[in-house]
Image (cartoon, rainbow, N blue to C red; front, side):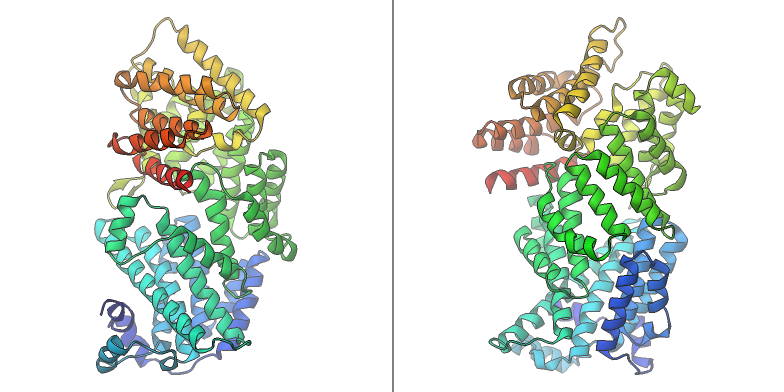
Length: 578
């Protein structure tokens, strides 16, 4: 009954409105054709043109117009975090749900009981109903995402979770229909364009859910499986690759999901290594078709950045900024990456410029932006810092008051930044030591720096200077041991990327041996234990590596960014065991 409850018996106000609406509808092939046109406009940076094509009253008579329009509105809300944009997106999604409900198959109670026993057959649903079910699943997923932004209470999270579960069940039902259709038409060579678009949507939905869920540590995944979810990384990647290759309306969505996974998720929440080669292959046809498309330029730049080609990355991010002026939030994405490109090169003046732009223009996370700006400012020479007209101490002191809260909980990275900045609120402030490099580690940037031995050597030189300053400090503060351990961790990371493994191991062991003397930076011991495990794996001792990483997972609790480390541990253990 579980899936039927989710899919056919949601007696909501929306459904009542849907049943009382006019029965007009747009032809499915025509709806898909116009959606393709809107998609092409979107990929060519004509965002408003895409909206105009989808915005007319047809949104009430076409699941694709409704889904497409609400998707763009959701993307805009996710970029701006502005309450007005979130409200507009929610209204669009609610309208889309009403439209999808109109065209979904209505099942009576008797039919539902019969279907539970015999199983639905593909003949029971028309082509229009199948596509309505697919669009309904997609819109529900988007609505679940915005539920987390709309209401930051625990109740809001529960509502979002229920909508996400309903979306997952709807995608699973679409997968059942797809499998049944394939079984019945086995051996037939031709497939309609509408069927290919349905299949591509199923690939995208099932693939995205599997890939997303597979990222979670085992203990979380077990709970999610108990709640009816399932996540398998290989299944997710396979479905998305198939979806990307179909040439369907949603092929680009499958491609973008894979790009996000390879170029961001795997880097930040994994061991720092993304599948850049596959990302390049996936992106190539879209670069050829939309050479000036902002998304294509952005991902081209990100690939260059991950390969250590910072000059090309900076050029392409600049081209991405110049390519369109309708969505300034895309500019903010570029500012963030440019800030890091210049930070990797230790060009702190340029890095500061982009951090400052983020502070002035973006609403995503002011606490992180201000902390980043202050950290970069503290790396600059006294003369360079003075030229900015800003005070490092004032910036760090402001971080605490800028933090966001979701469901009453602090965002872990913001909480980490606020804890680091707190020492500037003491009557006698104690300076942070190379904080920009410490944040570089938080975002797994050392794996990028490590691509260039010259750049890694330059970073190492900065770390060694900080090491000497601490060693020769005539008046050590209460943070002295913590600072020394931070420096040794960063030194060990850099040495490991330079292939000086024995020296790196000594740095990591220094931190672990001083674990009991660390007063404030409680994240150091577990993170360094994990990094030591990765080093053992590089040395070819997988058994010792797994033991060390398991130690980091099991023997430490309630420290800063614990969830982030558990994601990395999960990725590392999966990689080693494979």
